[in-house]
Length: 121
Image 1 (cartoon, one colour):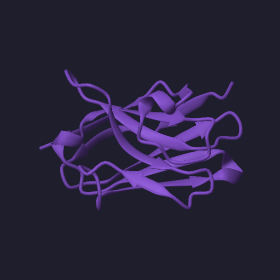
Image 2 (spheres, rainbow, N blue to C red):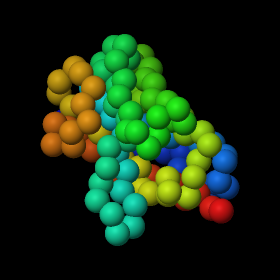
Image 3 (spheres, rainbow, N blue to C red):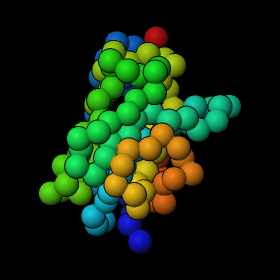
Image 4 (cartoon, rainbow, N blue to C red):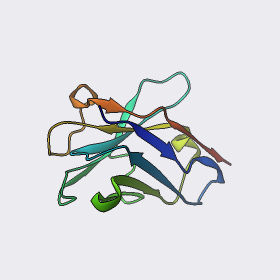
């Protein structure tokens, strides 16, 4: 049973940047970030394979967000740049038993409790 803990959320002005971190209690394989805004369904943000060699991004964040990982630290990161008010949400880290990057929430086995990101105008 792998436990995931997110950190790095906060309040930032539009156009600013934040980096989220996800610390795992042990080895992880495929990893991803999802987010859920008030009144909306959970949506995919970014995913990364175990090796870090493959990534996938939602169209809404392509060119602005970057997912990365450090397997020596059992951690995954989400660098968020040029933030928009539409990015306001609770961001969740997720891990799967499979090695690859997946955008499908049902393929993930482990979930963090989330970290709040609020982008002001």
